[in-house]
Image (cartoon, rainbow, N blue to C red; front, top):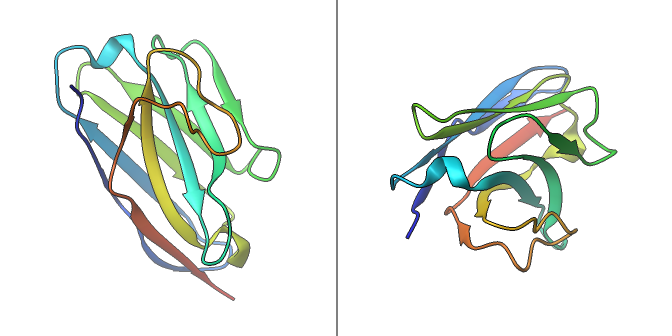
Length: 124
């Protein structure tokens, strides 16, 4: 069992930056791939970024490439999402997910565990 708790969301102006964190419980964190998804009001959940268990591989949605960076610290059981050059269209609830097998599909339906989400609001 893995519990995930996101933090770091907030209100930021367009062009600004935020860093999201996702703290995981459990001693098997390093065996899970980790990812971030987001859901804007009235829209489906969408994939944002993912990182392999070792951190050697990363994956990004086209909409965030070059602006967002995913990383992890297995010693701290934490995954991060550094978000730069934020745009109003990045406004959403951001969710952390954990998976033993890749679940980095548009909606992440097969991911094993989910956090409760953290709100990110980007004003224009």
